[in-house]
Length: 305
Ligand SMILES: [Zn+2]
Image 1 (cartoon, rainbow, N blue to C red):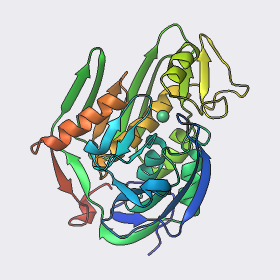
Image 2 (cartoon, rainbow, N blue to C red):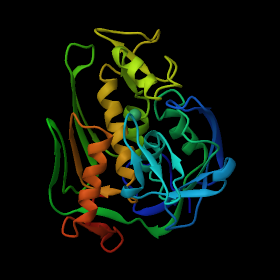
Image 3 (tube, rainbow, N blue to C red):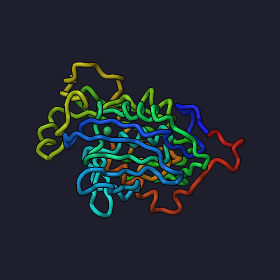
C-alpha cells in the first residue's frame, strides 16, 4: 500500500523506503569523504545504521538514547563494540519527520556526510525512495507528564501533547543571530518547507578552537553558515531570517529520534544543545510513569492524527 507523500499529518502506520537510494559527501567534523545509502527494512526493525568500511564492516548501531556517546557540536552514537558514527542528527531528523520508521542506513565511514549543512538533501533522498506503508501500527512514545532538565541557564522540557511539536529559543547576544524563537508542529510537509533547508552555523571566533579539538575539519562556507559578529561570511544570503533557530528545531528532531520511536509530546528548548536533549530523552525513558506506548488504530474516528 502506497501512501501519498509528503504526509500532511503524523502517520498511523509504520513506513519504510520503497527502494535503496545513495548519496555521498564529506563529514563536517572529520572531513572524510563518505558514501551513504538508505534502504528498506521490515516492520519493527527500526532505523539501523551499518558501517561498511574496513574493520567495522557490517557493524550495526541501533537507535537508543544510551547509544549516544558524544554530544559536542553534534550527536555521535556507538554500539557495545565501540563502533561509532558521528553527526547523525540531520539525517535522523529527515527520516523521523518524514515518518520513516524502518530503514537500513549504510555508511562507508565514521560520519554522516554534511551535504550543505541542512537536511534538504536527505529529505529529497527520502522522497526519491518513495516511502511505503507497512500496514503495521506505528508505536508512539506518549508523554504522560512534564519532565524538565536544566544545565545552568539552559533548559529543556517535554510535556504531554496530542501531536508531536517542538518550540525552541536561542540567544546569541552581540551577533547577527540575536534572540530567535520558533514553534513547529511536526509534519513531513512542514519539515520539507520550513525546517529541512535550515543550515548549521558556527561563530567565527570558535573555529580555531574547534579545529584544534579535531572538530569542523570538513567545515566550509558550502556546509555551514559562518557568523562573524553582525555579518555572515557566506556569499549567499540566509535562507530564512530566522534560519538559526529553525536549524535548532532540526537538531532537536534528530536527537529526539534517538528515543527509538516517534515521541508524542511537546519538546521545549531554551538555549539547549545536543547534550541536554539526550539527557531529557534518557530521563523520560527511565521513568515508567512518564510515558507509555500508544497507537492510533483502536479508535481512528476519535483522533486527530
Ligand atoms: Zn545541526
